[in-house]
Length: 400
Image (cartoon, rainbow, N blue to C red; front, side):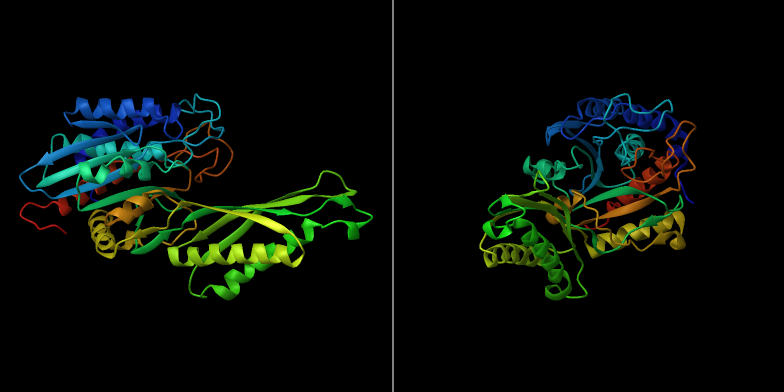
């Protein structure tokens, strides 16, 4: 493994910052202290800072040479609204808030790279260090773009990275094409006519209608979608009734839809609404249909994914850079990839044996109350960021 020596030496100090962030988690668009810590470090290292984009976003600007080429490196900063089970020294000090997805570690890896860039700028162009708020449901990437991220800081490509538990430390994964799914929610309310359960003929019972809808939705996946395309419809909530002897007036269905393409998503939304309305009508009822699109699919561009793979292989070797198995989880970095070429990669976080005494009894998995970021990743992730920027902005090179 070819780590940059200076990053290895600086890792303990950066790990201390990471643990401080872990102990003080902040939720989407409220990452004020986190942004203060990031901005203070960048300023201390002599890196110009722009604040307030996307409410609490921070952008560091590192220039070298005369080229107008630029690359963006992004890390998310927000935590999750959940109670931490860990009791070690750097466990969350805020009840109901926890860094259970490793965004504290993502911020730390990019800070480590920033510290290196402060004194070693072996490139010709500009590196934009993007510290983004509100990935966990707030769409912080979208909000930074709305605030002019790519107009104010023009760049040819943007790159992101997420820690991935369960895989051996020292490995990366990256692939072209879709790597994370779109995230969407629906709510359907069937309006019937309540009555006595002993006299169903005098009522319009919405419950069997709901059951028919749930079953029919799965035919969209098995009969309307191409078999080679991916899509998931999950009805996760059914609410109806208040008493065992009363047929309810209405029944509510809620759930999620995940796809890897907008085309499949368009088809699923259209067919779900058709099935819902026509099924209700077949039983003499009506329904309301709400469909909310949250995050689009995360789709890596081929050239940038291959470039990232080559950089990773130069650090850890070809055998330790794997194909990125697509996941139905969602990620708002997708918005940046819709606006610019780039790629979103995974860096292995290990199996949890790195955790200190006092960790929770659960597995070290994302969004688990016993999770903790693996600090040994800091010099590796930072080395990747540095080598990626140096390669992309190689002196005398052309825009990749």
